[in-house]
Image 1 (cartoon, protein in one colour):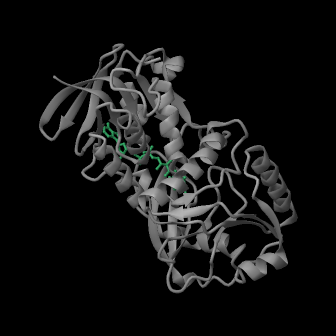
Image 2 (tube, rainbow, N blue to C red):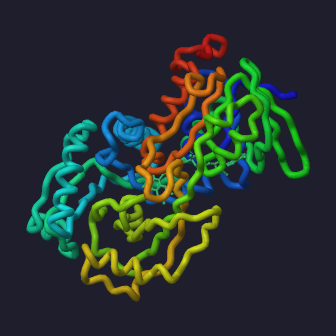
Image 3 (cartoon, protein in one colour):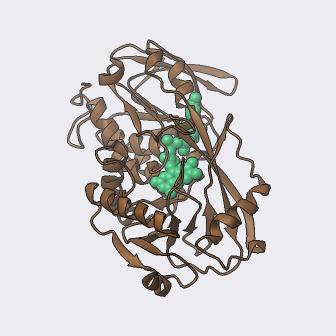
Length: 381
Ligand SMILES: Cc1cc2nc3c(=O)[nH]c(=O)nc-3n(C[C@H](O)[C@H](O)[C@H](O)COP(=O)(O)OP(=O)(O)OC[C@H]3O[C@@H](n4cnc5c(N)ncnc54)[C@H](O)[C@@H]3O)c2cc1C
């Protein structure tokens, strides 16, 4: 049986960021990815926004890891020439009631240490974004956009530089946990292989609960439920009327149908929220009318014939419809009692923004210190 120091299940942005972090201290690290292409699920089906961190409850992992991860990510993009733009975002209120919500966001931003968020009047917004109508807005200058595919390429290249590797078409179908030597069963085509590692990280995204439930020795009571909230995107054909990201006040289950720009200047609107039972990325064309109505609240001149169906993504939630949004769930030995194991559940937005900070958090929970630790020196907690 082959043995490595660390196995990561899942080659999305979280698995790759964690793998890079762990490999950077000299531990032999292997990422197992079920698909033929890494990052082909949630990590490439999102808004590609670098969030400032203003919405999340203060003290939550989402708030802390978004704020620290955002600055880490901007630095990383600079260092590794990953394309990004710190374009800023307006959050617009279209009623007095929504203005009240903006005040709440401003307070929440300050509590989270996001100190650059500023109030903008309707007249000020009109000069920034002439196509947008609102009663007032918040301006977040540290929000940006990035190329998530090139981010993952850079993380993978770093992993390989540190001697780690990604194995594609390698599905984890079982495992047995034991302190110091976790075993996983991997299906690669017709071949089943068993691998052993001292450290095991479950970063399987939408598949995290399924992977965890296959690990013998893990208390099933620690596995949270899985809920799926699908989001559609529609693109706007032709020239962009926007220079910044424009978000409405957040709705239940998501941040509302917002304007996202891509690095080529294209405009996409989304995502909406549809609770679904299965992972199915088909686009429901009939949602176009509801999109047009939501967009016209802040962009009244929308020509709906310019809307084209785009793509969908699915939020890996751990609370269901009508329940309060959950925090990121990063379970280490303190939660499940098994040394050398971390399970990540519910890594929805702002997971992309927070990816590098999440990697540090996972490393800490595994007792993997920093780049000065040696292969034999890094100890489990
Ligand atoms: C609609 C939407 C919009 C979003 N917008 C933003 C945004 O603008 N900004 C932001 O910061 N965040 C955003 N997010 C959140 C962000 O995209 C996610 O937090 C992040 O991509 C999660 O990455 P991941 O690696 O955990 O999951 P994934 O990318 O899904 O990766 C998990 C991987 O595990 C693999 N896998 C599953 N089971 C197995 C198995 N048994 N064996 C081997 N491999 C397996 C899968 O094939 C997959 O590649 C958004 C999310 C959604 C859904």
